[in-house]
Length: 470
Image 1: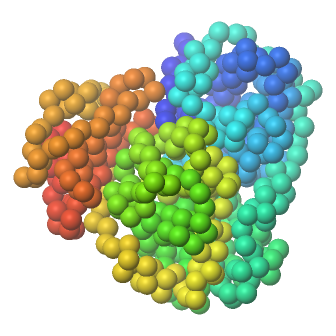
Image 2: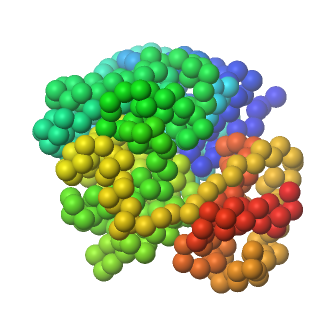
């Protein structure tokens, strides 16, 4: 019996063993080969993998199926972050890239991400075509066209052309890095130490269980980083997720700095200090303060649905300085159209070094007076019932006119790769909104809200459950 394989917002993620295994990986690799051969007679593909159980095995299988279809393959010779794979695609002029990873998902999962020739995520349309090729052809395998090589060095050299390492060294800052047992390993530390900059890594050795944590760099998972910051003398701390394309930030005090504030600090630095040209992209779950503070004639603000591939779609069509999502995925026009936790760590260090501050808490306190407070929160609800994908389409057809006493003056709807409504945002005023999303990769319904106070935000989240009827 053929297993049903559905691609979500960012590739395919599934349970290791029962769903993603040697057979299903080969099936997807053959479909991917058929897709590429339909576009190009002599394609070249880069393949990388993270620290999860079976990731290296799956990467080898994928590479061998591509090779069996006479496609030239560059296969990473070690565990690497997703953005390193993406840069390799761009650097080597590949037609596509494949990353074996389940990103920030729990250890029980693995997955596959596809990358386009510009070094960013596959579009929804491309992914649909790959899906249409599943089970069409007999699987072919060989090792003839597979070349193992180092993807890391080219990426390091690229960052050295963009980041001002001399300024960071002069500042005497010290960064603490929590790699969470993922593919970030000691890469950020390695890059900094090439320039004589002090850095310390924790949980740097890659392990498949991520040292008992979920490899998502959000506050509840970063207690070890917070405690280490409190005991040491660091400028601030960062954490990267399972494949190091997302970042979480903690102040030197050990306190969490939300992605919402991190986005404001980065955009402020890029636009007002570095004077980087171009627009700003924010996903629908990012604070309206981005628009209020930074939108002008030369800096248009683009709002897209949650998922970095939607940010990428805009990045490749317009002059863009920054694109960010509240989950910690940030991309830069001066870099690649891909979220990158390693590069974001380096840029945050450069930002602090350029100021007269020695700690991020001092810098944040100074900036807060001009950027202002954000009242935002998110709630994730596990929902395993069969009607999960029917809830939001039904709500869209029967939307409320009032929420928590506020008039709904606008509604934005977002659709999944199968053109089903999987996100609804209710606009209630400046910096006041409620967003409900049904995850394509997990049995979770997410509620996001921004308000004028913490109490108001919590009330909006409660209203979200009520109007959805769960």
